[in-house]
Length: 458
Image (cartoon, rainbow, N blue to C red; front, side, top):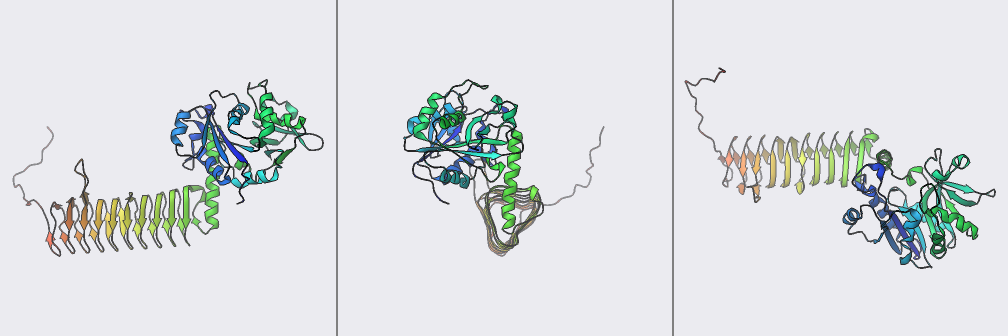
């Protein structure tokens, strides 16, 4: 990707309240694919490598600054939201006359960096660049008005347009590239004599034309690239489009998806060959899938590294874990952070594993909780086994060495070590280290009460 000239400054307008969201959260903090709308715009802005990056904030400023405390931006407050022209005017004191200003919006999340680069490259330094698009339904957008020779002469907002203007299908996306030197003068000439009582940035177009400053237009590749979010319906519409694009890209790389409409990608997914994903699967964070991995229906995978030939059966939740080749997980299993499984490990139904390493070929197949543990190779852990790792204040480690056999319904009270080859009898509560290659069990003596009678209702 070609970088923009060093003279480029970039501003993101994010001061609006977003009343139609009916939310206490600023509009730009609402999430698309598990990231705030503003985060999408910022990531695009970073790709352009501008000389300066400004963020105009207003409503919910404290929330914005908290959410993006580490963002490399200059924060500029718009204390009163008096329109886009007024918002851009707040940035002028930071700019030099030799620069150009690219105006973006915090609620237009899917604008591609390449589209913006094309606008910068196509627009001569002394002209104004406007990103426009011809659409079937232009309702709600400002219209691009051209003269008889086809040159742009002004932009008229929807609320100020008559029926003739409303019939125009070429719309203003709001994204502009403006030389700073004339912009200073144009912004001073803006008035708020319009239907919304605001200072429109779009009014500088007519002022530029009056001074014979050229207007260059450029169109994005897709309408969704420039769609803004004003309500939750529009947010959901963009979410579906974004997910479709993500899934399509992965399928073009070889991913087999049972139903592309029922896979959500909320991060970065890297796939091997012949990977198959069933319905209603969610990928979050960074997900790496090796060759021939199978993901069953209704699974959630977040920040996981899965090796070759692994099968994740239905209804599993995996987070911040690594799974070795040939392993079998689920159904209905949960792997929590810092879980590392070696090759050929079996984790079965209703098993929860947390902060544990499991050696090659070991099996935990039924109804168990294993936490803060180190499990060797070829270990078999029976149904209902629990590592009691927490005393209410501190957590302790359980170690189960190679080839151990843990009988069903066993409680291992940490800290405790089960030595190599040991067998723990079913129903035992183990509170001390057990010796290698021996049977250890703890059970109360079984007794029968001869004359006992079951209570009956009176």
